[in-house]
Image (cartoon, rainbow, N blue to C red):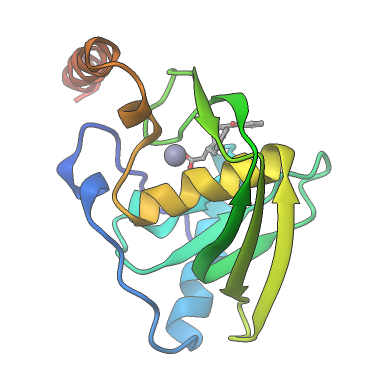
Length: 167
Ligand code: K1U
Ligand code: ZN
């Protein structure tokens, strides 16, 4: 297992649209293991492959208190949405920035698991928020893009300055 470096906003690689996984093989299983280790170490409740500069449609999520319920989504599709909810979000690619985003309240998701088997589930609450946030990453979208342009520019300036100081 290995910890993977996480790309930080405003790195343009975060805007790459990830390609579907053609085959869930040993390489993808290794990627899933490394992503899970990276997510737990961060710590985070989700991670999309885009954030570790792998542009394939793979997500890891664990919203459990005990951090013992890993959810792996390969080629996820949100097939139904209803309602609205507002939730404060953070992002491992936008460290130290938290803001409220409006998203669907209930979703239905279909995906492959780490064995390549298709499954479907309904989600609400923080799980629904996290799935939508991570699928956005696979589509090259970062949560700050839901905020005003003024806020986006302030966040960009702050993170670029911080990156210069820590370089
Ligand atoms: O995709 C990511 O960058 C991970 C992100 C997921 C997320 C958080 C909140 C709302 C929507 C999506 C994070 O995990 S940020 C860190 C975080 O929220 C957290 C970390 C430790 C414990 C609890 C939460
Ligand atoms: Zn994120």
